[in-house]
Image (cartoon, rainbow, N blue to C red; front, side, top):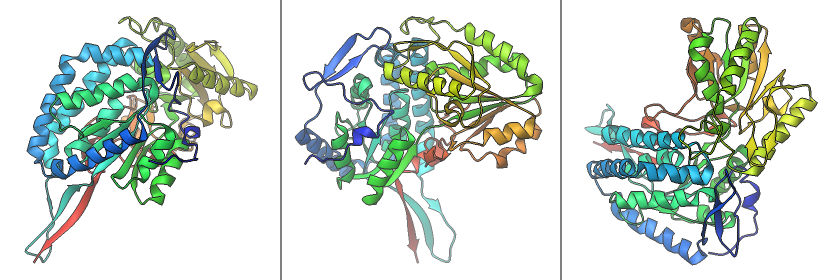
Amino acid sequence: MRSVSVRLDLIFDDIPTLKIMSNKITTKYPFTGETIKEYSPHTDDKIDSILLRADEVFSEWKTTSVEERTKLLHRLAEVLNTNKDMYANLITQEMGKPYKESVAEIEKCIWLIDFYEKNADGFLSDALIETEAKESFISYDPLGCILAIMPWNYPFWQVFRFAVPTLTAGNTALLKHANNVTGCALAIQDIFEAAGYPLGCFQTILASHEQIEEIIKNDVVKAISLTGSEKAGRIIAKTAGQNLKKTVLELGGNNACVILNDANLDKYMETIVTSRMQNTGQSCIAAKRFIVVEEIYDQFLEKFKNEVASLKFGDPLDPKTEIATMAREDLAKEVERQMLESIEKGAEVDMGGTRDKAYFEPTILVNVQPGMPAFDEEIFGPLAAITKAKNKDHAIELAITSRFGLGTMIFTENTEDARKLIGKIPDGALFINELVKSDPRLPFGGTKLSGYGRELSKEGILEFVNKKTVYIK
């Protein structure tokens, strides 16, 4: 593979650049900054051999019956379940997620696998269409090798929700993971191989950003799935488009959490706080903006502060820890910048507001308005931006005032009235009295600058297939 001059590293602001020590990728424990392990990046020749293997395996894998592929899913779940604690520890060590959340992440992957084991055959079965032909139907055929570019914040879940439906549909997969979770990336390949998937069916590549551009251009790669930033999505989509390759983009979000005046705060406050602070606030679908009707504002703020203050900070490997340091110091600095610039424009810190290296104190920012970074941008950390709305209509107007469209949540006791708002919310998801979350049974994805395409559910498994019309007269 030839080298290229395009600086793709400049677009991956949400995916760590290589930490090179003697040409090594270095992973570190965020809580202490200690080095965990060093890895050697793949050479161009190694990447060429990986691509060749993916292409060769596809020629056989695509002919394997869906029944055989789903049998492997059962074994895949067994491998995860047997080694759940080990994988949870790996997640926590590499990206700093509280251990109990890492365990939950592995369990969610198992749930995903179980869902597709039960439903893949039905999803991929020929869809009969009645025409004047003797027989006509849609055949769902795999495309080939699919490249996934994945972030660090859910290092197993993000990959499995791509890989399980993609492989089960008959494709092969390449993973370019974030460098600070390289151990997770390699472990995931081992998991698929231990479950009995053919060698080359799922492969992890340790590539530079320049090499990634060449991989996208390579004829072996038929489509690309990216979970990352808006900026990364634009460049990946451009490169893929120039080569006429499909993309699925799950990009950023600044989800609104709307609190109407009849919301049951005692019942849902823990859920509301979790919607912002889970994974130390490092989630694309987290509630980024809390829009509270003024009639209930003071009561909400008091209860919200008390719940946030109760979160237990500590070493993420401690099972009792509920919130920890962020994954990297530069990420904490970015949240600090967004906070300070918002303060300059009139926002006020009501709680927290301090940073120490990768630790960003759980923070509540009030008087947040459109035009401030805390309202307009995605804040990827434990900072809650709170805006007071005059009434329900004003709250919904503020909620949809966003360049992003991943999801909105509304808390109200009048769910029938809230149903009338479905058509007014242009996002990919609307959750009423629940935090926005991904669920294997439901399609997941966004609108506007949050990207396009869907993962999970039936829609997810049909993203990377050729919907072939078959007509027999």
